[in-house]
Length: 129
Image (cartoon, rainbow, N blue to C red; front, side, top):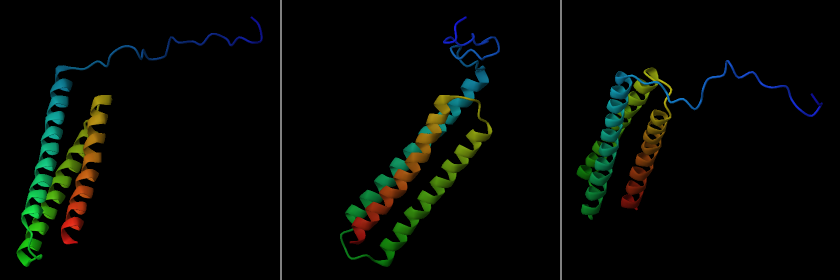
């Protein structure tokens, strides 16, 4: 053996990374349930942002107490949605089996929460100008 060549690596104890993850029927059911919950959460985000936008577009008058109450209602609804989404992420983390698809789904949900908050604040800023 020459000085330039490294000794062969013992791969007998290394995990087989080409082998698919072994999943049970329960794993698939659990993943589908979580993905359905995430999809539902995302739809609720879209609905609340659409409702806020429609409300703000319809309100062309000077801001009033009733409008402020409605805006506070939307703010509370978004907080409730965030609580549910955070609870879902926590539940998924506790129940987590290594799965890149679930990691991606959780990451998307967390990013969308930031998007919802930024969009809501932008809509309010524009309305209150």
